[in-house]
Length: 254
View (cartoon, rainbow, N blue to C red):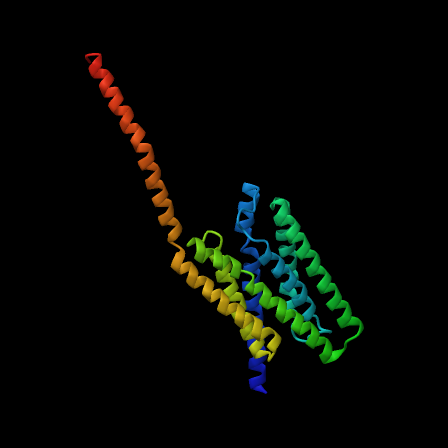
């Protein structure tokens, strides 16, 4: 009995940790979107990770509801907050993205909302009990894996460009902390739908942090090299100008 009480306390504790780290995770892109708004351009940033996060928030909120999955209210609280923030990020991205990217993001957004609506209606109208939990749990787990897998395109860009400019450190760290907390939460609650995707997310975030450690100084080195080459190019005309001035002074007998 005491053992069960300790597990429940730990379960709630890690759920609270998951909420704290999760909120930090959802707030992390604010730095990126401040840059997008300032430059009025999405540059090379991808909107797909934010769409996948929104997709996951919708199913996380649904899965955590008492009539679908008991004892997961903390999941619904976090996902509701995250859903609002991710919707704002997607809206900002749509405003400042190029036309081609706007069309792509709009299409994916329509698909995301359509799939969620279908699953939600089917689960409420035709399924009950464990069957409802199974459908919603699978949807939640799949979208969770998709959300954690979305940065793979950014990781590829980091390796290709040898720069972490488009993979913010605090975002990767927040993903690691949040997914690890929720994986432990799922383990204590014996919920495979929470354990599996968050364990995968923790692993992928760990890879991102390793990439950041490898390539974090590459941008500085590149900036120094570009500065040096610029100074070299500018130095030649200045030397030639100085020689011309000295020659003209000699011609004038100065």
